[in-house]
Length: 216
Image (cartoon, rainbow, N blue to C red; front, side, top):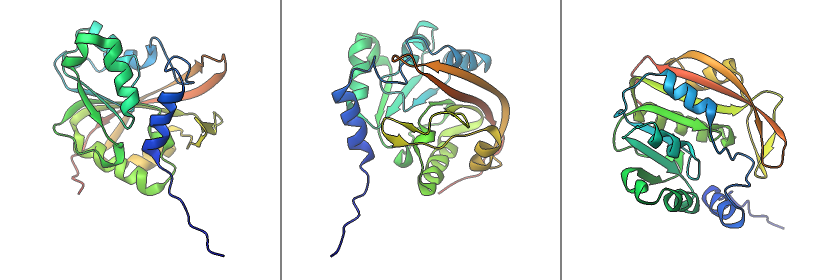
């Protein structure tokens, strides 16, 4: 008997998540992403510098960045449903945001960004080739001396999220993935309380891109 190995459809999974559940009930929901905002502020970049939130389709981060007068904002998500939720919530303000519906591993950035923010996308990439593609996209999209703000489940934190396996990280493990182009500036810890009142341990990392090695 022959068996066919069915490839996981990442896009379909995340479209269904935001179709079947309220964006306010998912475990990663934050009304105010305080630590992300603190780290973005700490970069002291000008308000017109390009900032992208990858995997931030339904996140409220962009709402707060608008309130803080950042004017060059982009949001990427694989789920059209997640993006639609934010567009509806933001109303007319959504017209001033660049929206990218894309799998991050296949994203071709149309310009260079000064800040790349990723809260809990990278840790879903359990396949080494997906992580390599993410890092190629990151390197090609982030300008020299740009800021990478990335958060993942901490070592000892959740092993699954949204029914999917994840990879937990500490600084040594993440540095090994990113390579020599990035220098770690600071690391912060967060105990995130989910809408179901469960605690999830996250690590946040702030890197600066120090080398401009091209990827193809």
